[in-house]
View 1 (cartoon, rainbow, N blue to C red):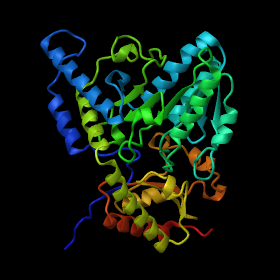
View 2 (cartoon, helix red, strand yellow; view 1 turned 90 degrees about the vertical axis):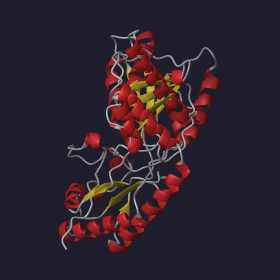
View 3 (tube, one colour; view 1 turned 60 degrees about the horizontal axis):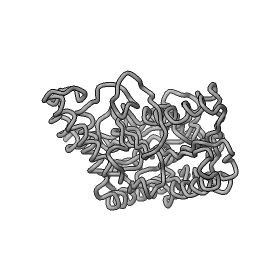
View 4 (cartoon, rainbow, N blue to C red; view 1 turned 45 degrees about the vertical axis):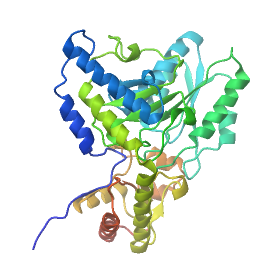
Length: 396
């Protein structure tokens, strides 16, 4: 009997399907139509739902509700963090310095580069072959005018789990050396890829600003959040209203906020078990790939320093984009890089920063599993890769 196999979605780093709980909340809140900024009954109902969502998200990362603002995406949260902190400082103090990693998401790299016109110099700090920075060398590039450091908690392409707590410790040491009258040094992390796989407690992490994105945690698209630690000096980025502590004007989206909160609450529950299960499937998948295609190469960190659901591989002689198209035809969704950079014909800036040889720079394929992935799925993914490798791989 002929039948069509179900597709396997293995591009969770780009976006995740909305969970049943988050969808249920979204549908429930579609009837909450009041503008939370008004004073009537319908407005109060909307405001109450917004504040409940804010509280739930705050609790999921160990923050206070007044430290959470909503945005339209993780990209917007990164822009608010960078521009909201740095632009007023540049206007007041003149030329300043910021540090980020060379493998950061473009929503961090591009806003920092754009501030060059306003007097900001930025060090895009190099990493080793696993995507990790040298903390000793990082300390050496901090100058007297360094006021902002941004490091993604989990790299979106190769899954490197960065040493956020160790960097925070280094920053605390610099602050102590500067004293009360010295320049501030703010620490931001884009944690969009982290909530489903790593426990998030902002005080333990030691960050001042932290980005979240609903679509990465089985929530809806079109909403993100930014944690802003109390006493962080930050100015409005979107003007025209007093919403979100005056930092982001505009009518809040109550249904998306509530749905996001439901997804974050679920993500925070059972992190360790979810990560352990998915890592087991991921490890099995890599073993199957090596068995079927022995020259498969793992890009980035060892599994010890890699987020549980991530594999980034190269098959010598198999073009990455051709692999993605071939896998799609076989019913498996994977990608070559961050979805924000799809269409860029140059090799991934992350893969280049890891020092991957030039002849392999366009062969990288990212596989990011959902928590529902099984070993049966892994076997199908490996078999599909074997099939397209035989079909499209060139001699190297």
